[in-house]
Image 1 (spheres, rainbow, N blue to C red):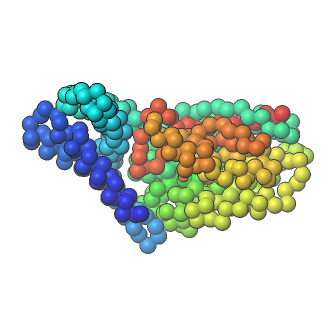
Image 2: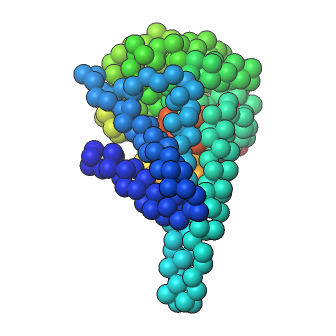
Length: 368
Ligand SMILES: [Fe+2]
């Protein structure tokens, strides 16, 4: 399975050389050069290496990493467009017996893929906008009516989502003057010693009732123990099958969290054990796929991420199937509200957003 992680991109590159580059009416040397540039995008995959405490990535200078990312993004985007082109070619040739000049088709794919890649990479690397969502919570005390919750998920701090990027997210979030900040996972891609400076701005997050989090799958790929210690030092309180009660006078609101299934004992029943009656519960669960199970525990609102909204057209259905039917936005799950954030950013391995932007989420709670 792990070998497929490396073999598939190589096979995709070979397909693209045959279907995209070779049909172009350019010199042989230009085709060789274009093929070498395409293969250079595979560095993105081979930068990953195993260490004693999980994975780490070979450090490239920032702009070299951006260049490799653009090429790798092109490989993925071009694949989808090429598949459409080649299926159309087969239909035209077999059914209609029409032979379209392949060099024109390859040139069109090249231009479309290049424009989509450049736009998508820009969207994937910019600081996200704030999206505000009003959410009605049954039984919410009037003291919490209008409560502002900033939700940050899938920050994936990295060599690309670096210190400046994370600081900009923190600044934008603090400027919202949130009462509470919730972070359901996927903080960082990399080891503590290499990524500390990129994650450090999170210690300046400020909210009246504090900052709470649950783990995502990526927490378990890179020095879990080291990062938990570090993030807790930054004032981020992890809820691992547990809850806290937020109080304002006599009014109460419960915030619960479960760890990601990758490395934690995901146990929603335990997370909401012994909660007081008739107090609304907001649950952080990194992946949305357990929503139907979570809905059994009288939870008002589940907050998830992980899907990154699909990131680009063409993969929505794959992401939906892999995540229990949930990709982005609002769902009603047996009376429980589920919000799946498109993510504050995305995994550094595929730093692209095509017509599927990331967001800093601001939830405004309303009594129902
Ligand atoms: Fe995730």
